[in-house]
Length: 380
Image 1 (cartoon, helix red, strand yellow):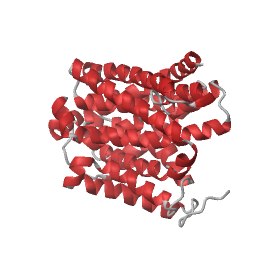
Image 2 (tube, rainbow, N blue to C red; image 1 turned 90 degrees about the vertical axis):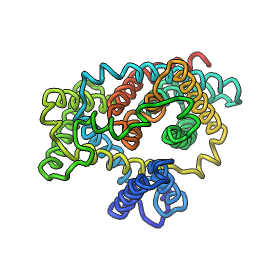
Image 3 (tube, one colour; image 1 turned 180 degrees about the horizontal axis):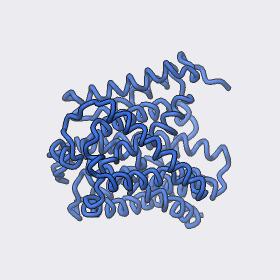
Image 4 (spheres, rainbow, N blue to C red; image 1 turned 45 degrees about the vertical axis):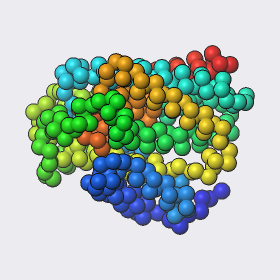
């Protein structure tokens, strides 16, 4: 059945204008007092969700596929060209530790919710799929669903509910640092002094200059890295680790040519732009009506997992004296994946947390499927 909307899914030019326009709105809101409290990311997501659910734009389009399949991988190198491995190994410990706690919290929420809610026969499968997905990502969702032999109907209902829950999780992750009582209860040097630290970490001026030689070179290098990463994935028969190979290659380039990468200007800002466009595409693809009519109980279950996850992560961060920003990034690496976590850290100015967040998210890809299948086997 053809999806009906004012703007067709094949109208790539118009949809691109909307995605970039909403991304611009997000950047503009970030400069206002409202943006300081809520972040423009929330408004980007909400803006395109309203447009798609009121049938002004479609829920699916080749435009969105291009954003997720091409622009997001392209953004990863742009955000990592100045990655300093020595700094990462020295300072990513708290993030990785908190990510391990976040992964355990997801499993606790999945198991506890399974026993508290009546999910029916699909329960064990959904528990495993959600556990794997909210430790790893969409790749793990698909892998676990196939391993536990979900039917197409079960898969459709499960992913429709999880999509909305993931958006809520993203909004919560972005909003948590702005909630005063949480920031007072769990102090953060990153949140208190983000601009200064971001400039120091990036090794570049706070206001970068737009230079065609720098921008075109950065884009060309990023595309080249993505091409090599895809080739490596195909040769090793591991296409699901495409982003992992991109990350590893980018870090290799960044550390082999640190002076050249540090001199590059505008690359990080361009990566930010692509991430905001990605948020706009994510919001556009969220169908609130379908989930409400077919997957309400699974939505409640997924929301329960997210709440348990966040509560346990924040409590653990308090007990272990982990920085609130590091806790949010570690939690994001589990709940919304490496690319989105990079965007969260970027939008908040936590540049030195981008790489640890991505690396934790990639590690989630590695372990997510195994944990998800194990949860299903245990509950079945």
